[in-house]
Image (cartoon, rainbow, N blue to C red; front, side, top):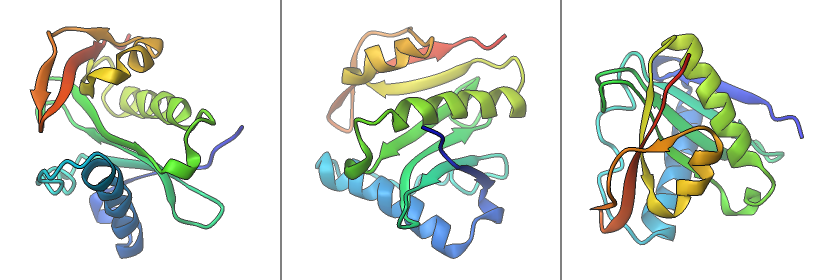
Length: 153
């Protein structure tokens, strides 16, 4: 299936796009996962942050991810806030989005490794995309996580 991806930096987002991105992230990470945490972490509006998303047929954000420049969260590029609306799960959208995020990171920051703090249950998902585990499991916001890295060539 072909997806129409949009990628913008913070200053390029419309108010509606920003609202829809933050709504999906809050619905998934705070509400679904019962995890109160500081969703607005001051990194969304960094001048190099790239917001990636796909809108569903209703025009609302169906899936999103955030790419952070080297040095913002990790020494390398960081990919995070990867979320898919529950009505769009199980159709390959998350895999397509991670592929697109890796492609965008390679264009924006060529040759830089991508570092993520993944929820531990997604280890196999990210390994499928070439990431490798580089830490022991740890708790973040009371959810088991693991650090992973993808070296871009």
